[in-house]
Image (cartoon, rainbow, N blue to C red):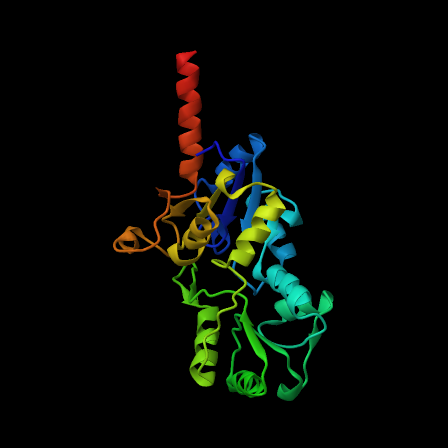
Length: 270
């Protein structure tokens, strides 16, 4: 698995859980950096900034640049700027996401009637007023997009509700289906990731802990994929699944172990 030019890694459940790195993850990243591989870290979380992810990785011993981190906020900003320039936007999401949108010139609506686009994201203070505002805006013709589809987020003590809960509330109330989704498994995220890395899909390995987002996106984009068993999806989830990874790994450390074993074998031959 060390023959790829580019490597995309999910974060939660793949590189770390909570504040702790998954065993062998840091060693694996250092190994790939030593081989001058192109790396990108990809998260579906919208409750933290890319700058904070950069700091978190640094604390774990992984030194990368901001351009090596991609989140749904960045994809959402690019999408709004391209497809809804000058739009008035209503955001269901936390302040960290709202601030990123404001900092990049996105205008916020004050009333449902003036809302052009409703952005649905993970909000741990989601309440009825959010739901009513979005519902009224949709009735007045607003488009709806979501930052990511994750139903839950893996945490050390067990997974917790994620953006899927907000999406479900909007869909159930408005009687619609939100089909424009920015984060994994969206092709928008896959294309953005490959563009940042500067590699073709077939030269890239996507590693993550979710069949329905990480692996599905990688497969649909034409990448090789590695499901790691340190997060949400387990071996039982593979049974009957329409999403099949190229590799199934105990953890990302298997990438290092496989490459290191190959190096030792080559040295033995020589």
